[in-house]
Image 1 (tube, rainbow, N blue to C red):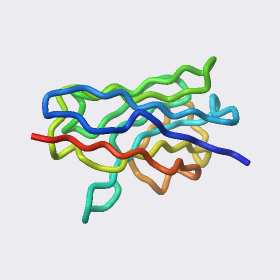
Image 2: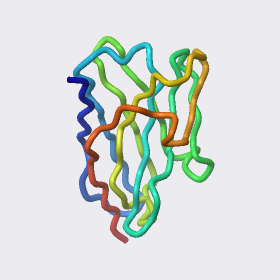
Image 3: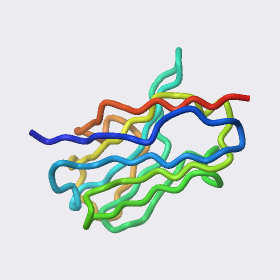
Length: 126
């Protein structure tokens, strides 16, 4: 069974940093991957994406704060978050996609992804 398992969530004060990890139990090195989040009462939204070719894309509001990366040798996806604010409080989900063929493909649209983790909660306090 294909699995994605997130970790690294927790509570942090505003201005702090946190790094989320996503371990893949199967080989996702040929897939594009992403991080999504869902705040209370809000729809799930894309935060960051990384392509098979290694190029990345971000939601504009987090582009100067968050960095997505992957370590294929360790089968792990990361989201490094700096200068966190209370508005970043949400469940964060790791996702992988094999629906699109292009090596440079990145997406913040959840419909482009077909494999999902269970989420890890991030709480940012003032």
